[in-house]
Length: 347
Ligand code: CP
Image 1: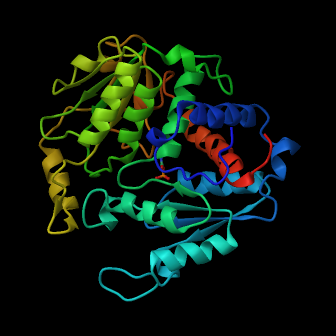
Image 2 (image 1 turned 30 degrees about the vertical axis):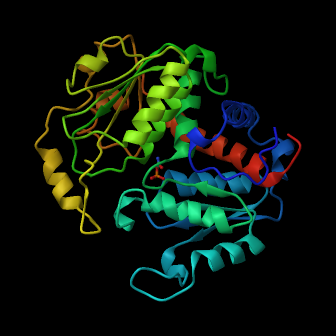
């Protein structure tokens, strides 16, 4: 499987065999984390990490990944550049991408909804970088997708339903019931992680339920892809506005707050208005009582968790919580993505 030079912007755009090549290597890397086999893959090479938005896990895991592959990850922010914006003259994406390609082995970019004038503009910017750059662009979370999170999620679920850490069984996910539920909270959160979760859960043959109050639907294109992915496996996709229904028989519960499709007005992300809208919907919290309705489900979340609003402490820190395993998996899947797309090594 030759993935050298390939951009990674959304899991839906990679063939299943390509995703499995990454996931299989990630599991091998997890089982034998500091093996000499990986230690020189990016020797003397630099990965640029370009952050428009803050991060804990993404920055830390990419920096560790670069180090463990023998390379270096350089942290960049817009203020460290002189980029052209809607309001200021400066360097174009074309020039920035072409110059960065002369230095680095890959570029990771994070740009979320509050940094762009309309939904999808962040994803468009990544694709503009991908168009001009001669090196792989890795999506470190944009306003539509979070592919590294999606891979870490499915690896964690397959470990829990397989043989444990480093022993995922992806076939064991097929036919299981996946609940993505909107959750209470005042964070006005992005669609990127939850949309990627829908795509990856359906890609691996799970029955998908999205529970959300009326008015909180996600990107229709993502719903359509999810529906198609499910249909390809004979699995089901449905939405409901009942906060309890989806828990019954669920094997995986994912709760997270997210914004409405009306989050932009006049080219500005309306964070405060979204927070106020969300406050009208209390009681969309994952609790032990709700988890008791499931088929002994695991709890999943990309973190940071809004404890007390999205989920109770009892569930987030409980014996069926996969959150830390999944956070750890960010490191392993990103090492695998970097090795395969930037290392060019025979793995
Ligand atoms: N899950 C995730 O992307 O976490 P950070 O925002 O902390 O990077």
